[in-house]
Length: 61
Image (tube, rainbow, N blue to C red; front, side, top):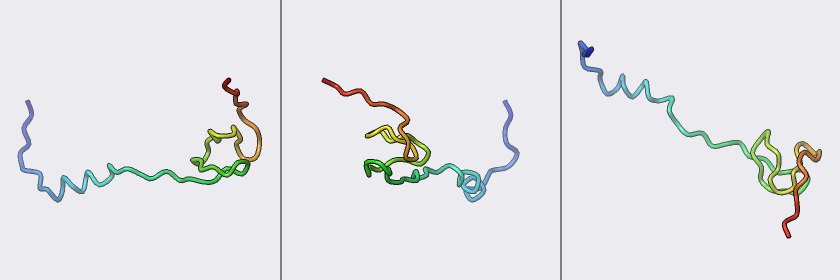
């Protein structure tokens, strides 16, 4: 197995790991029903996307 020649300092290791982070998704309000929706997604409540019907929702009985 390969072994490192020198110890990687904590600062150098942590600099490499700075890119691993969670990002809060951008949210908007639906133009049709007013519920909160993620950008570039069809509204889960009414099925509209950018003011047009994208998905017809079936009514559960």
